[in-house]
Image (cartoon, rainbow, N blue to C red; front, side, top):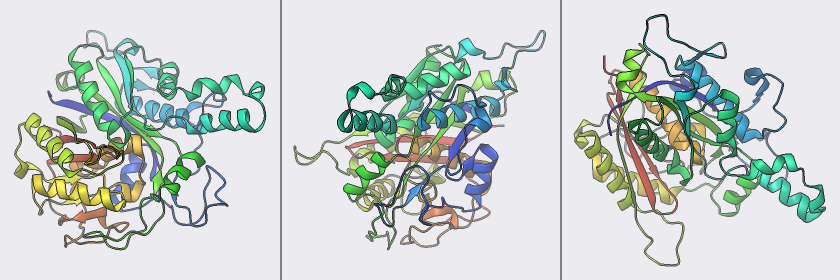
Length: 420
């Protein structure tokens, strides 16, 4: 992978909407208000003690206006808002219009040169559930035809191109909680092929009763599960949100004098089959080990070069243990490991993109002091450190972002502080 520049980002998360709000909340050690018993996205009366990390008070009209939103579901609204914020944050748009080159200046990416590569794990379960409920409990004749397009997995991504006038390539990646990191690899290829001058890259997931219920019935939401090195936590908290970074060729970003927030310099992925043929969901450290090794090799870096690991640890004990084992085997036990999902919730298809934003937060400023033991609780706050020590005066130059999938897949990304 050639170094790719991140020139801006847009985010709608449980910690806030927009770059400044997100970074301020994350750096302060804040966490999503997931345990106060109040849920906005569905009726949780039948789920005592339910915990979800929502984008509370989300009002798309604040960012998109009040016209044309009727055909968009929550997933599409979250993604379109994030895209609009990313385009403005990267300087590609200003006041809703594309920024043009000054007379005699270098051409800037316009609508024909900007596209989208987006990850989503479960699509619009809100719309799918609504249509199924009408068909089963009433009659298929009463299905709202305007809702049917939302059931297509890349519907939200398509709406982004329509709303923001993106005319270059539009790609939707589906690889569970590894998808957003895989979207970066896909974007790297597309940029290298000249399919776009800039790409919005990341992921999105929307909360719904169907999504919560699926994890709840699997025992993967809201349980208390202690384990080796992971003490008495509340278990994983399912979350929602959308995050997109503006990714460009490094030379192009510099040519248009764009502010580079960070650089992506390496990627790796791997898969390991289950031990038993009938198994589907399984945690495999070896897959992540191979992904990390490939990402470091791609970046031409040694394990000792890694200053920080931004992990996918979420409170799901078996997978957290496997991920920490793989990280330790590849970069050692002393390298500090943080877990942004403890603040943001498990945002699935958006998880890798949220982790990239967390990496940017650490790459741009000295990290907060964190835990001083390897067996620290997966607690809220304190920098969300789950292994090692983050000194307040330490400078993070290389961040490794990891994601361990539920089906034997794993991905890793190497990011570095922007070169001057």
